[in-house]
Length: 125
Image (cartoon, helix red, strand yellow):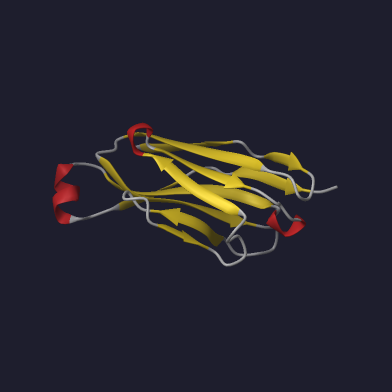
């Protein structure tokens, strides 16, 4: 079993900053990609940013230039630095990990997807 523990959400004014963290633990051999997704009320979950084990990143157009994703492979942790926050960034932010549970999975390049419970980010005056 794999657990993803998110932290760092909260209430911030427009233009402010927050840093989210997500630590993965449990039955993990190796983590391939990690990422952040968000879901606003009444909307579908959408990709915010992803990062591969080799630190190749991908961002949604709406956050490019404002958000930065990074990871610490030794700690199985991914971060999301969010600057210049806008009201439309308000959502529940979920962490995701695509991982290999054991050496056989890794040899076969067979990944499993795990999700965190989410952390609320509210941007409001």
